[in-house]
Length: 561
Image (cartoon, rainbow, N blue to C red; front, top):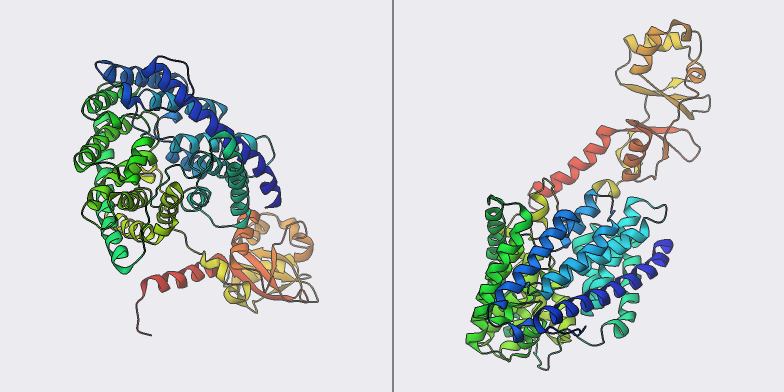
């Protein structure tokens, strides 16, 4: 834990610098393509989106991305988070330098040319790649590389959005697939370092500050739950629509490198109707939480943004999902807020929490994220109510999240549910077979062979010395081998088995440690000793399975107290 926390100082810095680079690349691309000037400033394409260029620029950008994906790395396709999850679970947390370079460039071209995406997915992938590359310079395990990969990803998210709490929770709910000090402390370290860098690389304060105040009450919590139910249902529809569109692209008689260009045609046409759907749309998010949009603008934004984002993301281009989800959820919440107390601004924030929670299956991350983005922690209870209801609906209506469905379609199964391993709750004394039958170490091999041919009822037996301490395990397989080697029949069991390693545990050894020992030693049985080192019992695989069966019974068997 301490070693990884020290190394996380580097991933935090790397994540912050990658966030700075990505934002400047987006700004440079946007200014070059839409305003024909050399500038790093973050601007919206909406003000320059007029005439045929509104369609031509997104198409040209998508053609470049398609070529980069085909001839560079196809891992830059998509929004980045599923690719990071897949690398963590199935790729030993190894990402390449090519991905670290191409992902931010392709995302900058995508967003800068008008793609309706945000920077969060790309920065998570880029920061994760930096953490992974740094980890690969050292002799570390796959689990340790995973920690540094996630630390880099969380640092990048923190640097861009200024949301350290949400970044840590995103790591826990979506990326780490564990809750251990070994991973949690380094992630916190990396996030804090990135947050310390943020004033110099991005700026300070909430990204979308809001001036309103929402007083928590029973009524506001109930209304927030209703908004969460509405946005949760909308998220389910959008998730289904996304993969339906993706399936339609897969049926096209064209190579996938041309798909982003087709999707960008829809983006350009949508921008002719509503120019604010182009780019990351951070100014649009600010307008939503400020409550400055009228009903017609909100409806138009909701409908057009959803259509162009689904078409673009389904085509396999490079870009993030979080900013579009915030806009769609914020527009839905703002629309409801036109008839709710407090105005549209607070309910736009509540809708964002519900949409993000349902789509990503990360309710705690969603609630804290919108609170940190706006600085309105007074609305955190409503955000939690919205995200909790939306999460529950998504779990009931969809098998997987918008993140894990993409991985599932590649033949992978992922569960985002955390649970305690039942083996971690029991000790050797709880699962072992006590007082097992033993064979003395000085017993001749010939007599042991006779024993296995007649009296033996178990597959193996502990071999003990005169003091009752285990020295070996003898099995039926040994007896069969000795039958083929008559020269071994004259020796004793202790002498014949002296060169075989014997896994031994104590009465207080946790069962999950025993399971790991069985795997490491390739042994189906482990001897258990008391405080004096004498044999007290033996643990077989079936004993461990019984422990799991008891936990399964607790999950499935209902009874009165």
